Image (cartoon, rainbow, N blue to C red; front, side):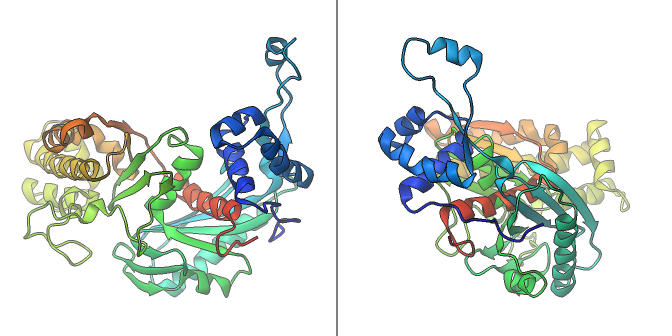
Length: 397
């Protein structure tokens, strides 16, 4: 697979970036509609689109017979614009304590290839080497229809400095100050974008998912950790220091519980899958119980197992209320690997949410959206696509 596109994106102005973003995230879309949504003149839209079409990144999609018929007698038929999916490709990698997940996507973050690798050693050097091997495996799997590779996205939980490709602190991985981008560069001569995994998932939802038409939304992930990504005022929130939306570390749980981050009373000490399992083991007396077994017991009505999920739901609902009281998103997407047991804590969660959400903030919709680890890797790829379109480091045009 080629390491870079045969030509760079011909985007010389902010208007060009805006136009391509609209086509990419909302296409197929007519020029007149792009003009309406961006406030640009149709002439400006045409000027921005022309070099993209010439370079093979965008194409006119012929109007359907029904569309053409509906436009008869009112001027030239509209030909919606759409991106050429295979004009580029991207690799997205998701890091977990037990596995590495990799995908290759097209320009619209559509998944082309998937690879999984088990992980039994979270030492940074070992993980980086295996990430590089996984990326090479995905490159070798490319065929003639796969577009030229523009970059690799790596999604990791925790405090991530995306600008410098540095994982400052990932409690789940046991990492501190790991220069992922620089270490990957020793194995692969490809631009690498490193980001917080929940923020990557939020970018994917913003550009290619439920957030495309939303004015504001939040993605809350429930699983080994509790995360939150925020899309507010036209942008996914990164925070001044690269930290934002850390719902799992709000101090809403009992103060005697110690979190993996080293602090006390974090939401994750009650609501993460590990915390729920630990509580179920403690209250049922079944020390060898696994999470699937705890879920089964709770579904069967075991009061001790149910208590673990009820307690988690109470704290998650309170955390959601705190978040909507602060930023007021119109939609909250609840996602992640922990949604399999969502029904066990949903009622208590919604009760706590309604009890603590202030005024009209409580009108925000709560939507369940199941995600696999492949989707998390796709989110990493989406961050590369966004950086490529915007000309952000390390993908400057």
